[in-house]
Amino acid sequence: MLNATHSRARMVLFLAIAFGLTYLMGIPLYYGYVSGADVNVFPLAQMMYPAAGVMLGNLITRRSDPDLPRGFFVLYLLITAIMVVSAIASVLTPQLPWLLISNFIVMGGSVVAWVGLALTRHSKRAAYGIGWRKGSTKGVVVGSLVFAGLYVLRIFVPAFLTGTQDEYLAYLTTPMPYIMLVNVILNFFLSFLCFFGEEYGWRYYLQPHMQAKFGNRLGVVLLGVIWGLWHLPLNLFYYAPDTPLQSIAAQVGCCVCYGVVMAWGYMKTGNIWVAVIMHFINNNLGLVFIPDLGFQNQVYTWPDVAFSVIFLAILHLPFLASRVFRRRDLPQPPESPAKVE
Image (cartoon, rainbow, N blue to C red; front, top):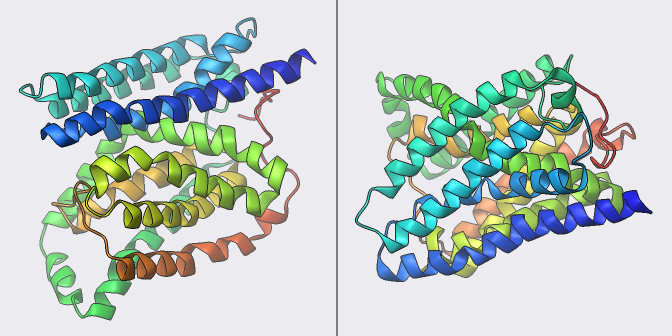
């Protein structure tokens, strides 16, 4: 009974932070949007909330567990709190370069977090899914390359269909994309906290719960819908405020499709880092092909949304037929941490 009570408490804390804080921060985000302030700190901060919810729940309900990586969790929560304050400050004191400040916070925090992970005992990393699972390296490499390949197809297939491929092909003959590729790879180590922040919440914590309740396939699809709706404040006041309904529909569709492949990678390896790397690829690989790629103040049309979602579904949803979705020895809900590293 006590374990069940603690399990519910962890879920409540996770939802309160992952969704409650996200939607609450939508208020200053809206204020910043209507006042013309630079609100670029908000999406960076929001990426950290899901993991913060998982960690806070564990710190409160498992504080006597000797394998609890307390130091790393506290460090992560401190960095998250600093990012929340920075986001709010960015709309209260818009004259300051808060995007630059927040980038330094993320970079400095990521470096310190790497050190924190290295200093965390092996058994603690394993018990709470923040370590590198032994024997998963090949799977992580293959999964990451597969996701990168899908991303390239997402860029070049529409380009060939619309006859704009020559622009991309000409660009690939210059040194710039390869310089950008090196920069993107190095940037992973200086920004991993944000991507870890989402995936430790979605894939490590919530995915096994969803699959245990709804089945391996439907659980992943429903998780994609939840993940998509989690972006709601950004859809309304950041990504595409002029076409919010189209933005929300595109977001949910994309999250379902991307989530299937990320789930496939995590289920195949049992290593959360494959999902972290995939998420990073999704948000950053486009800079190799489109250096001025931006996410703010976009305008969507319903035909664009329909084409995008259908095309992504064709590329990503076939992974639901993978044998891994029929396995029974999948990562279990992290309620009784097992040493799997």
